[in-house]
Length: 81
Image 1 (cartoon, rainbow, N blue to C red):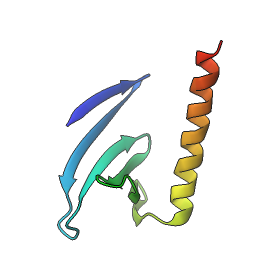
Image 2 (cartoon, one colour; image 1 turned 60 degrees about the vertical axis):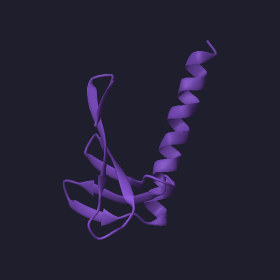
Image 3 (tube, helix red, strand yellow; image 1 turned 135 degrees about the vertical axis):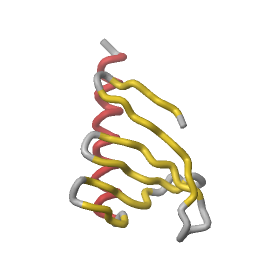
Image 4 (tube, one colour; image 1 turned 90 degrees about the vertical axis):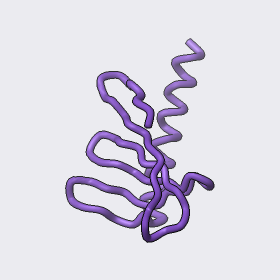
């Protein structure tokens, strides 16, 4: 388990086994919930929020990819100042 500080938020990444699935997943704590990714492929598996747990769909995967692209672009702009 690793603890990563990002601004004022702490993110805990851990690898654990799911009993229903044979593959391992990586859980990442985010603001408002957690996401689980397949440890081998990196594919989004599930999303947990205060509203409950949901199996990841194509829409949630696209939303997370979009947010990741925005963060990457912002970091590039900061680096190129």
